[in-house]
Image (cartoon, rainbow, N blue to C red):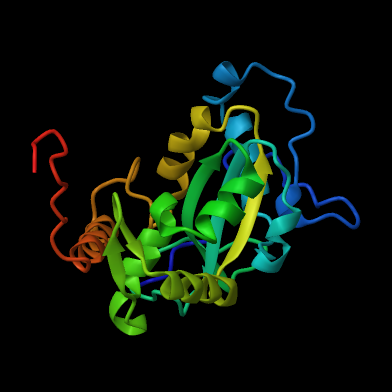
Length: 227
């Protein structure tokens, strides 16, 4: 499969370097003093957000330093990880490519407490677990949904720290622009907002495998009936 071309932000707005001593994925769109509902549809606004998301990715060890503000985030991986899936190379670090994009009302909570901790509250974790199910022999169980057993939650988190990287950008209303970013950047692990194709079918298949791995859903006792 041929590699996707490097990502380029639409328009001609250049990416800004992170401030000295700062983290690349803590970048902020400082001058976004515009009405979000209007700006989300403009090429200039998209260019600014894409430019920040496509800055040099950072190691997940720095994730606890993320702010509690709202924003968007992008996950990146070396090209050798899931090599059969497409993904645009990072312009600042061509050895890694885009895997997944999402929004958060609180960036630190979403990344640290959800994506790096609990499969029950992270679509990304469930998708990764499905892709790695056979390779890593992950085990699942039912709660109110299918989740990894505790030991395998820890193993998946360790795998993510070893193989994945992150960029983020603060944004006051990330929901207004998330779908446009998915349509423009085409991260292969996103289904919502993605176009039909081989990558989408692969991800759907692995998600089904993940859910099926826990077996049939246990019946819930009807507490209204007398014993």
